[in-house]
Image (cartoon, rainbow, N blue to C red; front, side, top):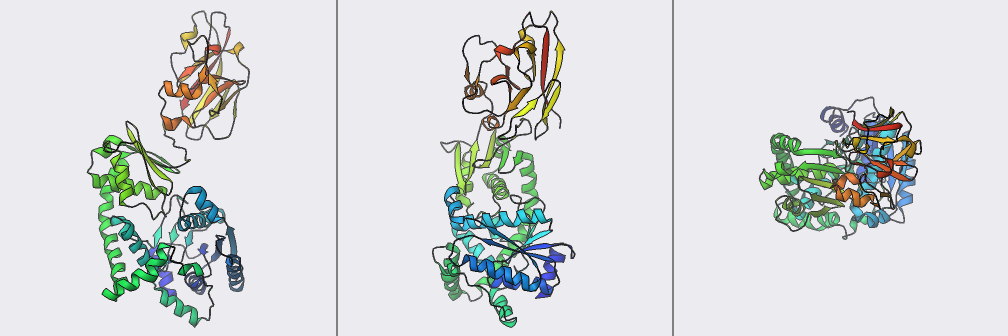
Length: 474
């Protein structure tokens, strides 16, 4: 069994024998056996335990794992989270919230400690349960692929892989290993709770299917292997169409060219949407066919709405030219949009430069007034020429806040909310959250890319000017 572990780690997954690994250990049969196998193989491991605070004996589990790590001479790290509260706040199932919190912890620690991979103890039995869960909820080929020995969960880390060394090992083999090594794993009583779908599949459905075929588990593992082989051929074609349609991506969102998606058959549309959804939520088990149909229906207008919920806080939304998948609360930023940092006020001196996260900058410089300059010198929306004596320096830049008002150039009386101004100029809705505003004192004096304020305009008596320019540097 040690040889099998080493084969997955160093041949299948291409890991370096000398670098450290983080292994998630709950204290149960599977993870305890994996930890001992890794130790026997001479791996440099950090033992990680996450306390979900869902059971009365959860703290005892954490203490047990910490002691095992000490006995083996391994480093130990621990995480804690109120998973029940997280599930309620984010409208997730307890299972989904626990998985999200656990992976968040594991990969944050992996980044901090600069390890080369995160290891979990998923077994062949877990693979069978996952496949049946996907079938019950409705799935395409991707759901029948099952879990893979090595994968990158981009939602948690773009560079550190998740490796599952036990996917070809049955749980009964690990139970025998624990008996042989006289290990006493912890027992999680919630594994017998039929409230959870995975438990019902393991305790009720699989035994029922075994009455029809005693080797049903082996047959399902073979099905997953066959599907993976077929998908390896198909994914190149889907990837090409995905990349051609993709307009922008970032943490928590993907945006696509609507016209390009509409040009494809519905099955291709749904595969592109599925891939995007799983990049955003790599561990979701709720992105089923019905969710994909809801998203694809937005493209051709066959549904009355412009927005649909898919699962686990993931929504799809269409505008005239794009389809966007996004998590609630995520900032959707396009390369052609400047994005001002959240909860920050930036100072702009004259001369000076303020740089934003996605390559955009606002530059300032002094100009000397000439007799030909009038207020309509601001004909370029990305350039503003202002009367210096009307300004309070230094200028500041921040996002829109509640109560901000603006008097656009040419409006001689009255003002409007910045939100109304955004609507009037048809600024893309997703761009509004992070759009930078330039202030003189408490007054908005420029909406970059759109309009100068009336109170800052150049007039015939202006003798000293400030020029502001919005530029994209990369």
